[in-house]
Amino acid sequence: MTEVPEHLLKRSKDRRTSLDGGTPAADAAPAAESAPIEKATASAAAAPAAVVPAAVPEPVPPYVEAAIKRKKIPIWAIPVLAFLPLWAVMYIGGLSPAASGEPSQLATGATIYTAYCASCHGAAGGGGVGRAMNEGNLVKTFPDILGQLEFVWIGSNGTGPAGTPYGDPAREGGQHKTLSYNGNPMPNFDKSLSQAELLAVVRYEWETLSDGKTTVDAEGNMTYADGKPMLNAAGELITPEGTPLFDPAGKLTIQPNWTMPVGSPS
Ligand code: HEC
Image 1 (spheres, rainbow, N blue to C red):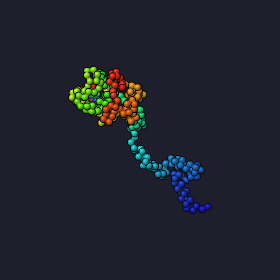
Image 2 (tube, rainbow, N blue to C red):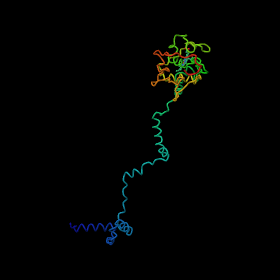
Image 3 (spheres, rainbow, N blue to C red):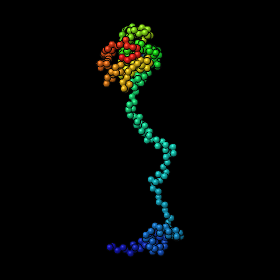
Image 4 (cartoon, rainbow, N blue to C red):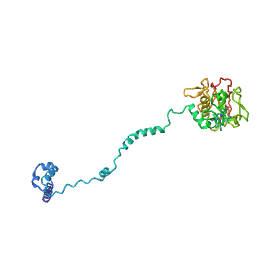
């Protein structure tokens, strides 16, 4: 064991004496060894006269100081913060397309009508630059909706030169002829609409504006009267036999049935 030099022992003793507030007697108390800090405080209080440097407050670490000085969250922000997770859920939900929220065929038709047809035929089909469709006018021209599909697809000029008859030959008031309304042609829509969109808008005019009767499948899409689909999986118009409804020129590949009761589906 190493011997502690005498002068070091003395220095240590002196130092302890000064810490104890200059009361060498306290140093002898056994309690002083087990609880030196309590002892130091107690003796400092007991001997105020002693020259004890006033307990210097621990310097506040800079990070604590920053935390104290930092602005607190204002009260109004609490509800804002509380709703943040809810908004996050709503925002993410809004990004993904609605699962089954696709508009129905008829609703799609209404949208297309407003965008492409209402300017000439009137918001409710009352007519204007284009012929009136309301009050059964349209189903009188086309008791079979197939004829209307063709007329809208290729327009007046695709149907034939001025004066070409179209629609029901036995129409009440006389069969309609191209460019006979006010001399203006009905535009063709084979370039601007898909065949599925054509069916949607034609169905909307025929059913909603002109009171035609339709049969629909479970999804609400129009079918032939016997329940056969009018569109194939690719969204193209087909005959009840499943062949294309239009030839390359946009003319019907099957004859419309002009003798069917007015306003009933093909
Ligand atoms: C630029 C004006 C204009 C727009 C747009 C227009 N039409 Fe027409 N439409 C006419 C005119 C004009 C006629 C009459 C054609 C004729 O006399 O040859 C007509 C006739 C028709 C007819 C025949 C009605 C009948 O009883 O003879 C149908 C059906 C029709 N339009 C459907 C539509 C649909 C569907 C749209 C939208 C996808 C549309 N039209 C957009 C001007 C327009």
